[in-house]
Amino acid sequence: MKVAVIKYNAGNIQSVRIALERLSLTPKVTDDPDIITRSDKVIFPGVGEASSAMEYLKERDLDQLLLNLKIPVLGICLGLQLMCHHSEENDTDCLGIFDTTVRRFPPGDKVPHMGWNTVCNLKGSLFKDIPEKSFVYFVHSYFAETIPTTIAGTNYILDFASALEKDNYFAVQFHPEKSGPIGEKILKNFLEL
Amino acid sequence: MLTKRIIPCLDIRDGQTVKGINFVNIRDAGDPVELGKSYVEQGADELIFLDITATVENRQTFSLLVEKIALNVNIPFTVGGGIRSEDDVSRLLDAGADKITINSAAVANPGLIDILANRFGSQCVVLAIDANNEEEDWIVYVHGGRTPTEIKALEWASEAVQRGAGEILLTSMNHDGTKNGYALDITRQVSETLPVPVIASGGAGTHQHFIDVFTEGKADAALAASIFHFSEIPIPELKQFLHKNDIAVRL
Image 1 (spheres, chains in turn red, purple):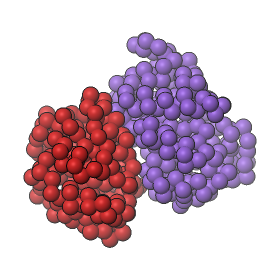
Image 2 (spheres, chains in turn cyan, yellow):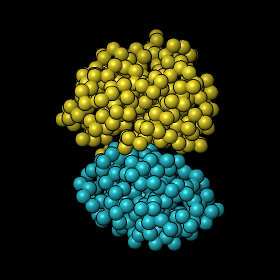
Image 3 (tube, each protein chain N blue to C red):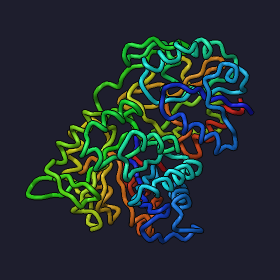
């Protein structure tokens, strides 16, 4: 299977590559449009700041490329946030694949939300055979508001969308590549779509 | 609900774990990769690997080790020891580490925290503080706890967070190795003052010590070494105990 991991100016991309290698895949970490469109699966990872990431994607037309892909795409962490409509982080217009807004956690507890938390109300093939309230690993200061296409929810300070799905687009706020066997199963579910 | 994290810490010298390890199911107790995998299976929430190698040449050994750890460990892990520059951090993150800790180099050059946070993100910059309780104050020590500074721990932690540190690893030198419990007062002070997670370190000896550091000490995570290495307190048993005592943990 050909898996492309989108290369851009965000952190944590190596972790995703290595997680795929643990599953015996040889992913291509690339920003080459040809390689990306000819892949079977695309992963859009990242940890970082929204506006500089969007700027980078736009400069290289990767935003249009992502919007036009027909193959399954999985956004992870910042990837999920960039696939939403708008982010409060430096007032950034994002890709708009998911019709929701990304906000900063309100005061109430420590930010970032860092560590293991549960995913609930699981829906769809991404969470096939994943038990309700499974633990996954989060590190983030901004969250996507819950919408009808939410396929997993998590509570920290408030309820937010920890996974979203629309057509061929999937996204998770947590890090499946760092979430033990449960995370590996979620990655496998995506790869088997 | 966000859970409290249990974090075993492994000291590495020349690519091998340093402290004596007393595990039954490990082929090579000195192999950090095998040991790390074993901790993951037991339910550790994160791992920390500290390179205590003294020489520059052997740092390369550590990077290679980090690559091997990354290929074998599917939970977050932090690496530290001897990190002085952006390049050091870049090399370790590229090798697959999720976070890095900085200690003496940040005290010598606090601007390093800003540089690292801006380039790699606050989420991967953990400030390690070795603090010693002297005449009512907690004083920061550097160079592996050998050299005192004039800096107070809480002030240093606050400055580091303002500069972009995303997490504080707070070791009480007075408690480290005693097995008499964590330093609850300074841990609580740092945790309540700062908006970032605090990992308490030094002093774990009993199950109750973990309850104390999570409740009274308000720690977000607890680090320990020897009690885990020697299986004095197996992680699964510890987590069950915490769960029964209403501490949220990942089971």
